[in-house]
Length: 118
Image 1: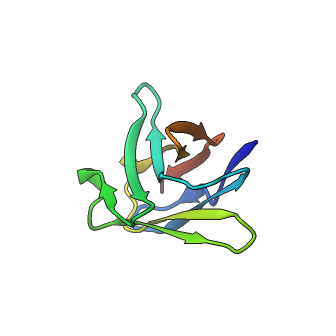
Image 2: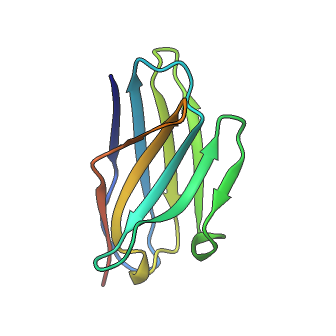
């Protein structure tokens, strides 16, 4: 059984920063890719950032220069992906979801709310 758990969301003022964490645990042989998606009210879910097992990073144009994604492996088998979000804008407000692609099967977390407002 695979578990995907996000944390780190909250309310922040425009120009502020937040760091989201995504912990993936369970019976995992290897994770092909970990990614962050977001969905704002009335909009479709969109890819924000992803990182492959080889370290290849993909960032949405709207967040380039402001967001970064990283990944670490723990000896206890837990894989964690981080989304560092700087210079946040009101349009970054959304529910952020973590996704793990494991041997071509996709696993999602429950999501964490990020609200950027003064």
